[in-house]
Structures are given as C-alpha cells and as structure tokens.
Amino acid sequence: MSWQESVTQTVTGLGFDLVDLERSAGGLLRVTIDWPWEPDQGEERFVTVEDCERITRQLQYLLEVEAVDYKRLEVGSPGIDRPLRHELDFIRFTGQVIDITLRAPIGDTGGAVAPTRKKFRGALERAEDGQRWQIVWSDEPPVKPGQRVSKKRKPAPLQALAFELSELQQARLAPLVNFKGRSAGQVPVPRSTE
Image (tube, rainbow, N blue to C red; front, side):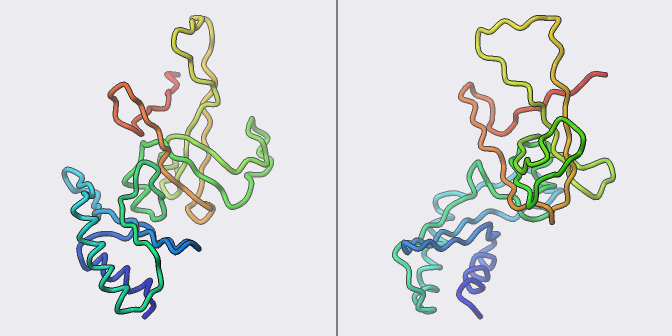
C-alpha cells in the first residue's frame, strides 16, 4: 500500500472525506478534508480547527511510520473555492456559482461563445436530459454602484453550456465574497421571465 492510500485510509477511518492530497516540491504536504455529505442530511457540518488538529496528529504518526519525507504538513478544509470532482459534489452544490475549465475548447457552435473558449463561470444546474450538467450565465457586465440603468435596456440573454464530468479538466466553487452580509456563493443568476 502506498503512503497516499494510507493517508486516505486514515482520514476516512476518522470519519472524514479526503478532498485533496497535494505534495509540493518545497516539502509541503497539504491534506484537504471535509465531513461526508449525504443528499438527505439535515444541517451541514463544517470542519473545525479541532478536526484539523486531530487529523494532523494521526497523520504525523502515520507519515513517520511510512518514512515519508516532508518538511511541513498542512491539514485544512476545502475553503470557498472548493474543487468539485465527483457526481456527489455536483449534486451538493447545484444552484451555486462555479468555475469550470474544459479539457478541449467547445468548438464552433454557431453561437455567441468563442469556439476557443475553455473557461466558464455560471450557476450549476442539471441539464434537461437529466444525465449531464450545465452552467447558465450572462455575459452582461455587472452594474456599478450608483450607476443609472435605463428601464428600456434589455438584459443580455442567458447562455447555457451542457457538459459531462469526463469533459472537465477542473471544476471549483467560484470564490465569491459579498461583504454586505449575504453568504458567499449564493449569487443568483438572473432568470428570464419570458
């Protein structure tokens, strides 16, 4: 068994999910953990400092036994730009604003989106076929504070891009922070009333 498998087994054995395991050239070993999530669970649990300390102590013993060479061990929660890798992650964060990078450009669709574009930000939804996912966005620039908007101005149309998880190079929650008291990531995408 490799040391990576041992880390995964230790983290899951303590009741957590291993979100990410990263080893940098500078000797940093970064372990990202979260509480397991079930679609029908009530209130969501968040990782605390005490949880990170508990995992750190266990991993220090494990890494010493496995003779893994590292300079610093860092255990933390996924944060506001959490990576999305599994189907359950996409189910959990449906309705949230996410950033995706496709493995290949979308190609010529005859639409308003450049055929070489690979990066998108929009609200995550289940596609109409029920099998794939999609993000919905508007390329309309945000209104600046104090800016007057004409009542005659029509909003930019909403666009949607359907994808399968195998087409993604990377997906993350968009790190949106609103300092006016609303929770991060809860930015709604405007919907057409037509």
